[in-house]
Length: 59
Image (cartoon, rainbow, N blue to C red):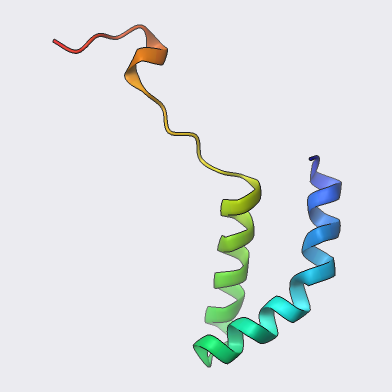
């Protein structure tokens, strides 16, 4: 999935997700942060790096 596809999904669902998040948090700023972090985690996951991938060995 490329960035333009992710942006389309974000724009399509943003308003409804914000409304839902505000109902949970009671605060617009918290709701926006929650929605943004959720999208970032979903579409740009951080890969856990293992030492074995770098040629290191445990002593």
